Length: 333
Image 1: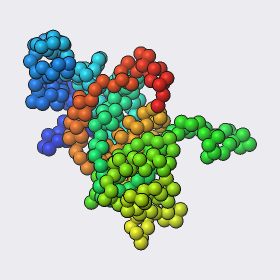
Image 2: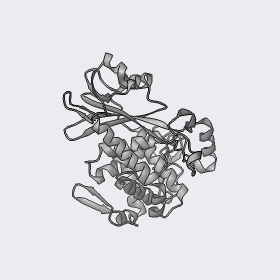
Image 3: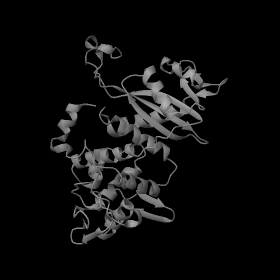
């Protein structure tokens, strides 16, 4: 286990080794205090706050409806098999991954099967996605699109190779990620991401109208997909075939490019492959890491644990390796 990972919150510092050495009671109390306000359990079925507590099993029994529940019931950790300390350790490790964290590396650090780590990491990404701030952006806004997935391996012999840029030679699995970033004093301060099948005017105009206020100034490149935005917004365009930054209008999309830089490094250096079914989760994870890059690890750890405990059970990832994976593949992404 890597011992150099630290959680810093104010003056308190806790290493991963200390997290895994937490007693069952302390780990339980941490989950309980973050799951419910003031640590007072509330029945997920009827909302009653009166209960009996079975201390040997760490289970609550509602006095009103008699339903039994735990600190992880009706959360992404529902039906858990691992000790609570392992989930705290997983969140701490996940928090420290600057450019993401692969399931294989997580499985080694936690000493669990790859399948377990794979589902756990995706559940944390889903929790981030479920709790992302979708309030409308205002001010200096940058938008851009990058493509992920759908890699076509080139043939060995030169005469057998095809032009992989042509539509007929693509797999159809490549997806576009649209990022909308609000500028701050030092870099971007808020990021929204959306998955598209193509960089087209209809989808981009609809998304921008929904998530960006009319008073905003939008910076974009010369792609025709952004042309319709001129009717509603003040637009600043930069031609990337000539320059990265327009000196006359101060137009640039450097912050949007910065986001894609981190996401591509996450793909190349950590995950190697980002399935289109989970691409929105990967994108929202990187957006979260970008927006919290100046927040200390302790607060990110608590925030991520809060998001996980306030997210409902995942319909896609629950029982993923017991047949639900095939069902999810059939309904498609």
